Amino acid sequence: MISGVRMVMLGRQGAGKGTQAVRLARHYVVPHISTGDMLRAAVKEGTEFGLRAKEVMDAGGLVSDEIMIGVVDDRLHQTDTTRRGYVLDGFPRTQPQAEALDEIAGERPLHLVVNLAVPVEVVVERISSRRQCETCDTIYSVQEPPKYPWHCDNCGGDVVQRDDDTEEAIMRRLELYEKETSPLIDYYEKRSLLEEVDGLGSTDEVSRRLMSAIDKRLAG
Ligand code: AMP
Image (cartoon, rainbow, N blue to C red; front, side, top):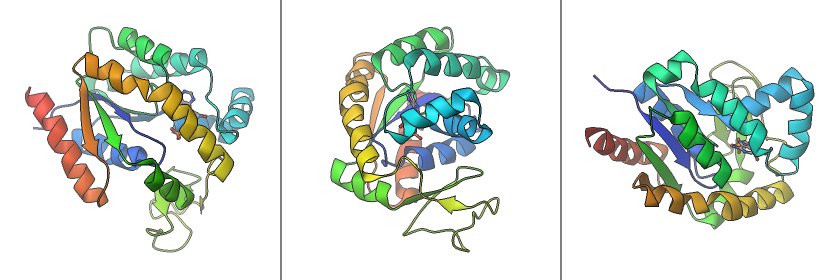
């Protein structure tokens, strides 16, 4: 019987976090919590909050820590996550978010944090060819399109390029990643929670590497 897991996926934009997080969540039977997907859902709903978030996202910026911490705090207190665990994708992205996560997790601390390592030249190439379903967020690429272009294999929704996957926004997001998020690698290394996993290779290969790192931790 596969047990649940509580984990964070770190890695540059385009490292394959989203794709791998979905697979891991299915395998370990835990919710996949993507703060980017949650924000995109709010944008689609057209709420006041969604409209403000869209401006920040399209410019490649970061939504405020206060808002993001509130969103994740609510989500991690729902029973599916408290019972089973979670794969957290896109959070934390800053030091204050990481500190808040320690508090939110409280008595149910993280088992591990994975850094999915892919060089910057490779991610720029990957992001420009990335496509995503507008309805269910499934990720595709120009190299691996849906069966009937460009309609999602899962739900038939339109598969498009993300509004924040423009060259300018990509560069800004990568800069912010180096400045705000990459210091978290050290933060989790010091807490002996970090597993570095090579994100190059086929999707299946990377999944196998991730699962083997996670299983070792869980056997711990
Ligand atoms: P992602 O899908 O993870 O690349 O997120 C898309 C965009 O949503 C990011 O470029 C940010 O603008 C925003 N976002 C997602 N997660 C966070 C977070 N934890 N903190 C701040 N902004 C976030």
